[in-house]
Length: 245
Image (cartoon, rainbow, N blue to C red; front, side, top):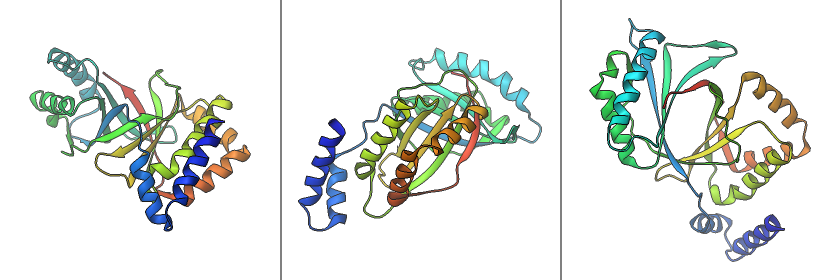
């Protein structure tokens, strides 16, 4: 009953404006994502004479130093390595920090600098903050996991507000079919146009099984049509994700 009531509310809101584009803008001011944490991603390249062993030796030092600072006990840090089928590319990798306050990001960057992480790898200096929340209640904590990332953009006149009912329908279908996937939705701080969709699986095999079972459902076709109507996405990128903090 609740989704039906929400649909009626949306229809009424849309009907209050003659122009659909202006209606969607008004709706986006009324319905916003309920974020629960922040994320920052850093693209890194291994130094010429360094290997994964260098990174592995660095991690314990980083964790000890970071946890000694005031705060530093609620954040999560991940290393992500691009995956091509079962092969892992180790020259390039990402650092992903999940946190609550922007000061946590400053503390993270300070720790990397103090431990001379740039001797091991060079990372971009971006301090881009993404506001995020989980679309699913399921959380996969059996690391390493497979992380599939899609960078998307809302089409003109659309936003999270217009996508919300589709997202709820998608989430309900995942629960109903007991799908083995964790999904995170993110928007860049200050932007309601660009968003990121992250699917997390326990393994490549789990991802393959999910895709096959999901595509066999009639509702998957309906949801895909709604998504394509409202947004465009780049090709997904797949990573093997390790949690270190």
